[in-house]
Amino acid sequence: MKKIFSLISIVALLPAIMFAQSVGIGTATPNASAQLDVSSTSKGLLAPRMTQAQRNAILSPAPGLLVYQTDLVAGYYYYKDQFGGWQQITTGTIPNSLWNTLGITNNIYNAGLGNVGIGMLPPSNYRLSVAGDLSVTGNPPTLHLGGATGATSARIILAVPNAPEYKITNALDKLFISRSTGPAGYVNDFVINDVGNIGISNSYPDTKLHITDGTDVGNASGGYLQLGPTNGRNIGFDDNEIQARLNGVVSRLVLQNGGGALQIGSAGTPAGYAVSINGKVICEELKIQGSSSWPDYVFADNYILKPLPELKDFIRQNRHLPDIPPASEIEKNGIEVGDMQKRLMKKIEELTLYILTQEEKIKNIQAEMETIKRKVK
Image (cartoon, rainbow, N blue to C red; front, top):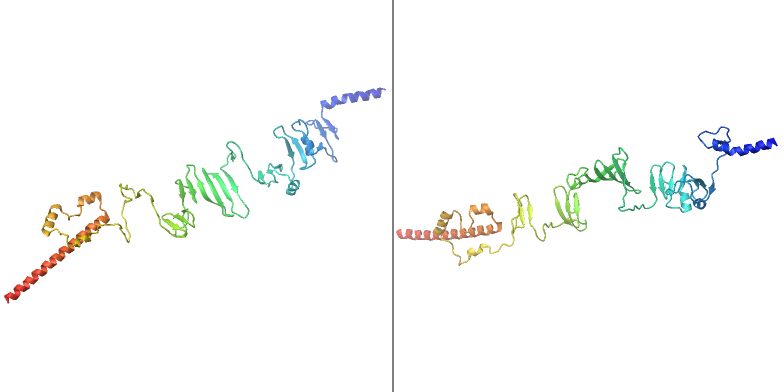
């Protein structure tokens, strides 16, 4: 009877003993830091096993609750909290064939290395891999790439199979868009610096748009910059030429069509003039078209030449020819080439008439002299 009473007393005291100290299963010396210490070399600890539907049906799961899911993506899951929900714990790999077989997409998989894949098994060297399109929403939608402490650059790399990679990099107070040149690296095709200057094939733009590379502009193609389609009207620019082209052949270059003056150099364009040039102009041929009243009227029978004595008096008094502006006026206002050509031609034709008149007088004098000689003989 005493033995039975003693056994009952031990069983009654057992919960109090277990509550007061660590409990060991398979060990007489449980670790003091563990409430339950299970020790075995041939058996393991089996967590509750259930399907995904059964796991999701648990009411008000406590944070840290652990289960083993037996179907779909099997594995250990723990309940993080009401915001994080159920999270899978795994250090293994899930083959792509399993994702395809299950028809599962838009799932998150953590490979145990901190790398995350959405709808795919992520490569081990990327923190986030997405199979499909990525949409960013918000007001405004923002995708922020922030560098860690000490970082000097941030970049986005765009790559498709069998094509050059393109890299967008923020570094050195500039934004670079670079094109892969193979194993040797990248070439900076487009640059924006910290004051808003844009460089094309130029990492150090000095103006709002600075292009320092290209080919010699030609009638059909080439240049640093082209405006317009190649198979239509376009203008090509290089570092010292402008070429107008039409579908591969040279074309007309039209400036200020429809109004407005063209100014070359710093001199202003006076009112009423279409072009002003501050400096000298050289050309092989210059044509002035549209001149009227060309002075061939000088040769008309009714044209009256100014008598030479009157011409002599005019020159003595004015120090220039009639109908020709004086030097002071030309120095002030310049000359109009077309008008001056007409004035000069008039003087040349008048001079020709003066010469012919003098030639006739000389012949008359010579004839009179011959008559006198014959009479003397």
